Length: 275
Image: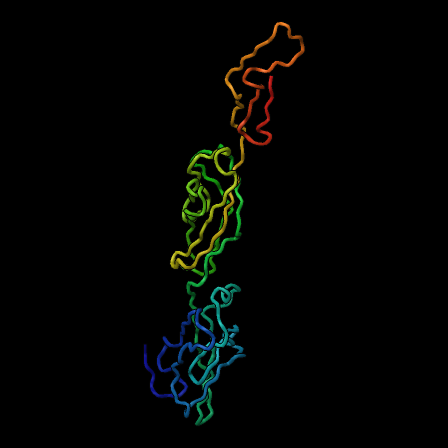
């Protein structure tokens, strides 16, 4: 850094202080910086050139200048500013006038808008529905459409997934494939007849650098019944007492009651044919 000497309307230091950095979380009215322009209010006057043909962005419009103090006029969000291919850093020009002879000098500055970790990861849906056959094997990877995104850039856009362990009595039946892949892995055997056919899990996307930045979504698990249960009779054997005087056809009821079978499957899978 080289210090310059004395001349009004020149930079006190060259070239480092021509580049200004500003965090996106600065508030409207905050002082961004004091421009290191040589001269006192009795020697020089300054103004921002809002409509300079040399400056091709609207970045200047977001600032006001009080002598050499630069203030934020409107909030600048890094993600919004860079989303439409606006330049970053961007230029702005200060016109400096020497009061003694009214000569003017244009001084170039560059402002680099700095991203901060201010966005939570967001799921692309708040509710996901997944159907799983009850005969699915333990260890099966179940692909899902579950995905989240983070508007922050670079490392600040990194996040991890995890399932809330206390979100359901069936949370232990599943785990995620990894902290960056929201596919499900079956950890326990499913049985339509012994567990709830529908239940919810809660998945969380959490910022890797700020645990307060997170969001949640619901995974609704639907267990599909499969025709995997044999029908069963109420008794293994039935005893019949038939009178020698019984005529045909006539109904004979076993001592144990009417012959009846049941199937633990549901719906059409529970239909029984006798032969």
